[in-house]
Image 1 (spheres, rainbow, N blue to C red):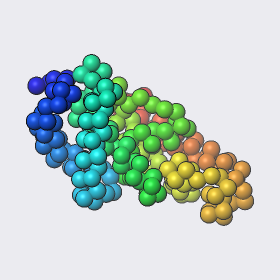
Image 2 (spheres, rainbow, N blue to C red; image 1 turned 90 degrees about the horizontal axis):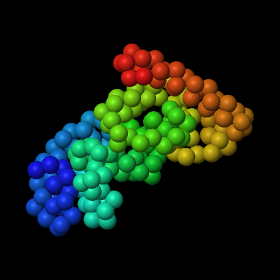
Image 3 (cartoon, rainbow, N blue to C red; image 1 turned 45 degrees about the horizontal axis):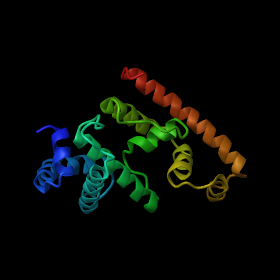
Image 4 (cartoon, rainbow, N blue to C red; image 1 turned 90 degrees about the vertical axis):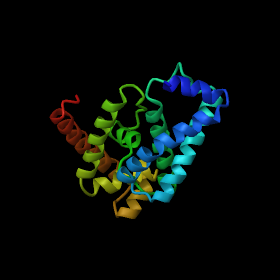
Length: 194
């Protein structure tokens, strides 16, 4: 069966199709998330269940149909899992090893990027963005994490890191973003992803 046929069957209430997909994707999902995110297998199990709940809900309410699915259903499931993992990490104020959309947002100063189109290309670009953020060094990694991931204000970060004021943090954040963009551009050129 095709992904579109699976979606249509799930929409009709065919739980057997949902079970087949649930079992088929489980191993790859666990491998991917334990390899790329700093989370336990128990947390991955919760994220997997929550991801399928989200996919099922999107199918039932018509947000995901066979006609508007423009990536593999497995890829869609993984994207849902990434967003769930990100939400959990924001609550715990930790940064995952890999988070496609957030790191891409850091690189682009908050632009919203549609990652459904050309997903593999997007993941490679965003892995480069992750490397750029990891390699930018301190204090940039801390400042960017506190600002973009922890959603702290410039004033809070200034107090926590001993800077003069929020303006100093804003200036430092700008310099850090320029470093990240430069590192990202270099990496993308090396991999012919520009």
